[in-house]
Image (cartoon, rainbow, N blue to C red; front, side, top):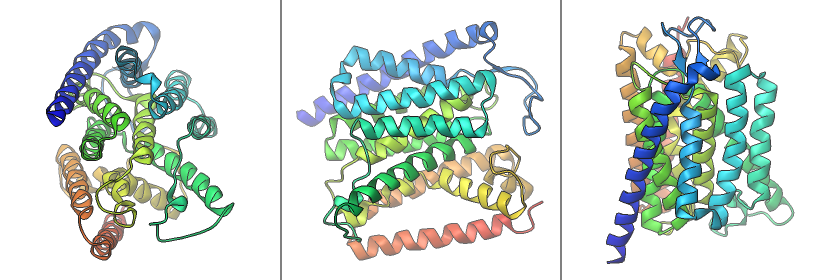
Amino acid sequence: MENFAQLEYVMLLLIGSILLAVGLALISIKIAPDVGLMDIPGSAGHKKHLNPVPLTGGVVLLDTMIVMIILTKMWAIPDVWAIFVSGMIIGLFGLLDDFIHLSATKKLLGQIAGTIMLIYLGVQVQFFHSPEFFIQVGEPWASWLNLIFTFLWLLTVTNSFNFIDSFDGLAVGLSSVSAGFFLLLAIVTGQTSLIFLCTVILGICIALYFFNSRPASLFLGDSGAQSLGFLLAAVAIIYQPKIGSQASSWFMPILIFSVPLFDMMLVVLSRLKRKKKIHQASRDHTYHRLAQRGIPIHHAVLIMHGTSLLLSMVGFLCLNLPVLYANIIFGLIVLLGIAAYIELDRNYQ
C-alpha cells in the first residue's frame, strides 16, 4: 500500500506541476512583450528565428516551483529549501541577463553566488568522506576536495545546459530525461526530498516542452537553462544510492548528463583549438555538426535525446552490476565519447 500511496503522490504532483506550468506559460507569453522580455531576431549572429519570441521559460520554472513548494509545505525539508533558495539566485541572475545581457564574468559570479549559498545551506559533494569511494584521504583534504568538486560539478553542469540551449526543445528535452531518471532513482531509494524535486522539475519540463519545441512559442532564456542545469546538478548531489555501492554508482549522474556534458566539451575544446572566445555563442554545437553531415537538425535533436535516454538506462543497469564490470562499462562509454569528439571535430569548418 505504501508503494501505491507514493505513486499516487507522484502522479498528483506531476499533473499539478504540468497544469500550473502550462497556465503560467500562457500568461507569460501574453505579458512578455509588455515588459520587454523578448528574444529579438538578428540580435546575435547565431540566432535564426524570424519573429520575436518570449524569454519566459525561466519565469515559468521558478514561479511553478515557488507555488508547488508553498502548496506542499516542502520548504520544511532542508535539502529542498537549500536547492530552492540557491536555484532562485541562479534564476534571478539569469533573468537579469535575459533583460540586460550580462557579461560572461557577471554570469559566472551569479553562478558562484548560487553555489556558495547551496554549500552554506548544507548541500555538497561527499565523495571523499565515503568509505566506499576509490580514493581515501584524511582531513582536512577530504573536506577541501569535496568543496572543490562541488564547485566544479555545479558550475560545469549549469553551463553545459546553458550552452546546449540553442535549438527548440533540445535543452528542455534533455532536462526531462534527466529529471525522469533521477525520479526513478528517488523512488527506488525512497528519498522524499528527491522525489518532490524531480517530480516538479519533470512536470515543468513536460509543460515547457510543448511551448519550446519546434517552432518555439517561448524560449528558456538564460534564466531557464541555467536554473534547470543548476537544479538538476544539485539533485544529483543529494541522491544517495541504496542499491549497488558508491564505487558503481558515482558515475550515474555523469551518464544522466552525458549529452550536455559532451556537447560542452566538444564546443569548448573546439573553440580553444580554433582560438575563438569560449563564451561567444556560435553554430558549432553537436547538432550543427550532425546537420553538416546531412542529418536534419530536428532529427539530430531527437538523436541527442535518444542518446541521453540510452546512456541513462545503461547507468541505471550498472547499479546492479559488480563494481569492476560497472566501471569497465563506464570506461568504454568514455572511450566512445572521445571517439565521437574526434569524429565530429574532424574537418569541421
